[in-house]
Image 1: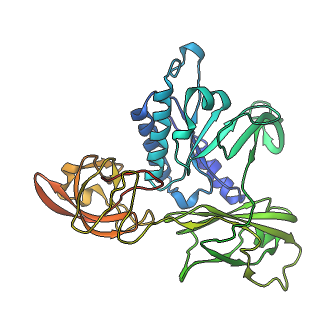
Image 2: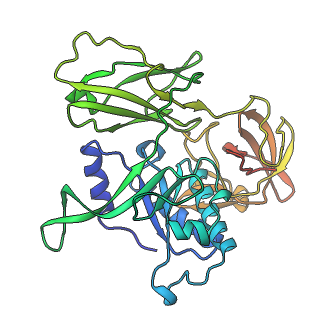
Image 3: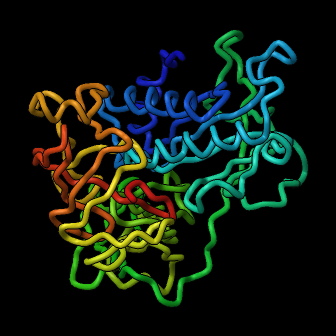
Length: 377
């Protein structure tokens, strides 16, 4: 496993240019264990650079494909192992609060793995160089060619304008009749304001915070004419809103208005009832209940991904027996017995059982599961 030495520079310059950013990991994982390790390697790299979920408008993709022909590492991999690897990668990325995705070519998606086993929140990106995409199952992005010439993209070998991949990104622009959130803002903006559009978003009586509950990206917002703001929910909010904008010379008289009737608003509150969370195993979590972790879980200082993670060094010597040290962060091991002290949506504050005794950890909030996945039973 290796890093792209240009990634940090490219990431910073893309941000400065107002370009939405995502990540991909070229994977040669032969099973779920290796895929999980690759995902953790990528997350560790992102965290080292200070890049959290709120810094990515696009997913963290597993770029899963054959390399090296018959001598390649993945040659002969079974469909079960490939599918399990993809699921493990996505689950691990999701456990750290990032949005997961899978990039693969048509034949790989069709013959080597089963995309139906992936969660509905996994973005599927299909590569097929053709006039249409032949993938029968769902996908959100289609890479249709690799030989486009785009101004500003040059070959490092020749110094001339080089070839690059090009894609379609499919976003449903149908207006949601019953949005969970109300979005207000200006939709006619100057070129300067269009690079960083501002909105007021509320969910009931709660006003969402940019950078904590959502982030904003731009589509065609670097020129005059029609554009979009792409609002992506993070943390306990999921989905997106696609807001049509007009980029003009002036914005005088363009007052802040309710723009829900103009945009595709699928930004939703993901948590379930306050007292219980029903996961894939239909487990109902209650105060005083005793359960077992079925995955490695981050320990948070609050109920949500936006809260600080507990440092491994902050644990007692006894508590370290049920936690692993992952880059200085304490991660509760799979198979740990926990007792619930408080329930908040799909998060529980817990004590852990060490050597037959219950111990309270600092913070000690863990996620029970999300999007049909179960982390605690």
